[in-house]
Image (tube, rainbow, N blue to C red; front, side, top):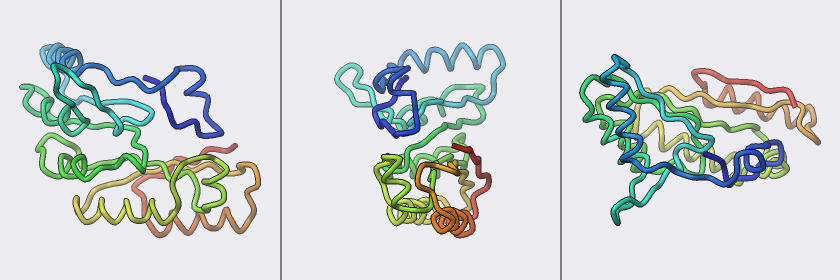
Length: 183
């Protein structure tokens, strides 16, 4: 629930408050109920779902741990999660997606723009080069993984040249899907 990133175009931090991770035992309980009702696929949802962490009974649980636990729930066949924040794409999470049988090899990781100046104005907290490095880690760790992204067009100060940098990024990364939003 919520978000701590404060991107300049987003209302989530002011409307939903700070990022909060629910206890893994509570989530697992819900997954068991859903599985008993015949649900076969679980989608873990959050503004920055891959920053999930919760300490329960003195133990830190990350998203990779939660996916591993859900993998053991009988009846659940597929586990997805959206939306991921690029700087929080950890190696342990990538390894979990690769190694956990029920984890779907699909990641939604918004780049938002292919121009560093636009990313700075959006207060995204990463550069195009850092996103490129993350994509290289995804491709190296999970060969054949499908990745989708979000892009904003018409953001404050966008020029034809900076827009073309976004187009270049789309061509470079060959996203499975790109979701385009007009500012």
